[in-house]
Image (cartoon, rainbow, N blue to C red):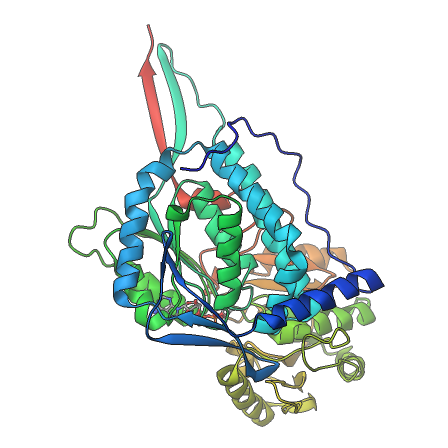
Length: 525
Ligand code: NAD
């Protein structure tokens, strides 16, 4: 095991990583240089990493630039079932050593990973621009959040190593400690391909678990860059594997393996439910009930009350609905607007939507880039057709042209709560607008969803805001601000019902998902 400075580790109070201001010419120049450097590495081939063992395979997976799909960002080895089994076995073999590594030492690795990513921030931004279609600002937010997760979980781990004292019975020393679980399978989505990947991985590692990471097939290069950062930070190569390949082909092998102890998943409702069902089965030889943390989809609503700053509400809806092309689990896909301000809201929103610039995400001036792939674009366009039948098209409603997967920001008004585009997650730049009779009706409509991830309310009436705090059934509620942009430490993140297990990533309770408590009572004379 590589040597690290001994504990104790003293860390300053957590603070969120500041965002780079790209309006400053030197910062913009640095970003352009990073984009050029990353572009010069397009088409490079990456190996599978099985606990430090680099492997190639015959079958390859190409990741593409969604702004220009003829460009291959990275070429990856498609992992086989055998690779998946080997990765779990290797993680299981190294687990006892990693579990014995002091928490402070593991926490220090996280701080070092944060240092590496911080040093290479523009480069990581650039990979996100090219592989995930993020604009500069969205890429910067994703990379900053990844750094935040490392720094925050390092601090939380030190706290977990010193739990609050228990009641001390006479003649006994009573204590509670937390043990790691074992081998974890980490399955992130493509939409926060660095932040969520880093958050789930580092939380599992810092608490003493070994992991097998299976990133999304759309964003494997960013995952490979993170693996590089972990190795550069000195994280033992045996503590993790990076397995690229189709979720369906190797995902089931990883999830159902008898040596898998837990699965940490973020993605869609259907895949999350499938994983949950599969993990509930106990194959021969398995000695535990697998734990599943599954953070899933959203159909997030913003309620616009008659008593509000309407201009602020319009901007809140605009940024929540169309930032990163509506491809955030927290994106506003339903605006529920009081009937007295409904027409004015639509007029103002339409004129703002028409100002949004859309095009290749490596061009700083574009507010919106492409959607992730052709399948996503086709699915979004189908939903737009459904929406046109269900309501009144106010803006967008078609592709934006160009080489990439560009879909215009689309607003469809007069949507009923039973309509498909009100109920189903589209995961693209499509906003349904619905009229409410009053605030209570608006809350009722907002809660008429199987999801419960984020929501926002724009109102200047304190009693109504208080009512929303009690009755708007979402894991993350925002008052008089947009419903996207959760910050680590300030907005622990996770939703209710079909939005998942409400694990509250980036919050003080999150690490508890990755440990098991052990109470020890020792007789003292
Ligand atoms: P997805 O469910 O299609 O894929 C997520 C991951 O699961 C990918 O890595 C994929 O390869 C893998 N996968 C697919 N089938 C699998 C299987 N059978 N076994 C194991 N793994 C399998 O989701 P996506 O398209 O990557 O991401 C978008 C979805 O994620 C949206 O629904 C969005 O709302 C949700 N999301 C939720 C949160 C949250 O915190 N709640 C955050 C981000 C994204």
